Amino acid sequence: MSSKHTMQLLQILVSSALLLVGAAAARKTTTTHIKFYLHDIVTAVPSSPATAVRVARGVTPLPVDPAFRFGDMFVIDDLLTEGPNTASPAIGTAQGFYIFASRTDFTLMLSLNMVFTAGPHNGSTIAVLARDAILDPVRELPVVGGTGAFRGATGYGLLRTYSGNLTTFNAVVQVDMYVRARASATH
Image (tube, rainbow, N blue to C red; front, side, top):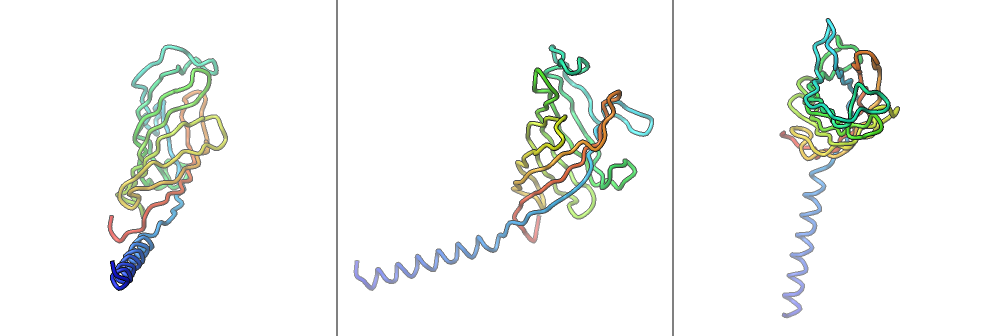
């Protein structure tokens, strides 16, 4: 190969590399922080129907509370709101399930999709699949994907129990999501 052809090939390779770098820069990744509250209603009360339903019962009672068993599975369709009160504006639902995955404590295997039905993220979802040690003051759960504005999302959520009732087992959880997704003009 002549040096003239080598120089032309080198120019083509450099130009191609610059185009690829430019295309990657055009698909910037942005981080979005979303704060909301999840209302997990295990026991229906006059103001709220149950949104978490036990569909499988484990065999071994947990030593910390025999009302729950290793292997208990709940399907959820929990309300997501802007504030901690159920009268606060709704922004969506958390749909999925959790399983008591520890034989010794309150640790869940949690799989859910946060489905946004109002606000700036309406029509988008965030998927979470994680271990949730529900008695820890702060739990970090990974984001494994999403749709719409959060297509291909990564990131994490910080969960804090805002309030809980030891009689009904109903809880309100403060959720701070930090989601990275490629900025795009269309969903």
